[in-house]
Image (cartoon, rainbow, N blue to C red; front, side, top):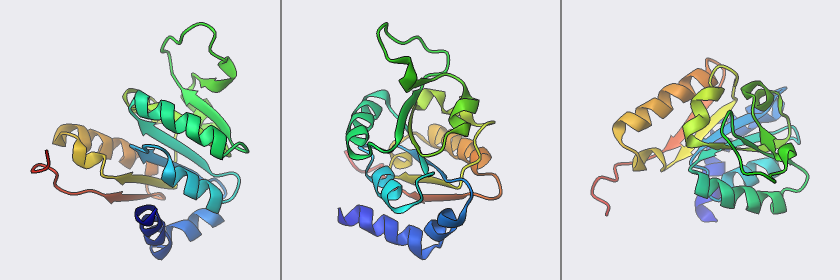
Length: 171
C-alpha cells in the first residue's frame, strides 16, 4: 500500500535499509506488526538472513503468521512461547521456548505474544525496532514499558523508528 511504501522510503532515506543490508546479522522487531506488511516488504528487500520478530496480540499474530507462511515459504516460521502451555497436537518444530533460540535464528519470521517480549530482552541485539501507531493506542505506562524494552534490545548500535501520534480524541 501507499502507506507501507512511504514507511519503506523513510527507512531508505534514513539509511536504515542500507545499514541492514551490510550488517552481518539482520534482525528487526516490530511492535504491533498487524498483518505483517512491513515484515513481508523487508523480508523481500533484505538479504535472506533477515529475521522479522513480530510482537503483537495473540489474535493478530495468528493471522500474520498464517499469512506470512504462505507469502514467505522460504523463511522459517516459529512462535516463541517461553514456558506457556500449548495445546496437545501442536507441531513442536514451530515452537521456541528458549529466548536464546530466538536470538540464534537467521532468516526467520518469529511471532512473539506481547506478554512475553520482556523474556527476550537480555538475548536480542536488534538492528531495527519499528512501530507504527501501536504505541499510540496504548496507555502511556504501557508505551513507556515497550520503549524501555526496545532501548535494551537495540542498545547503542540499533535504530528505533516509530510513527505515532495523539489518538486521545479518536473514538
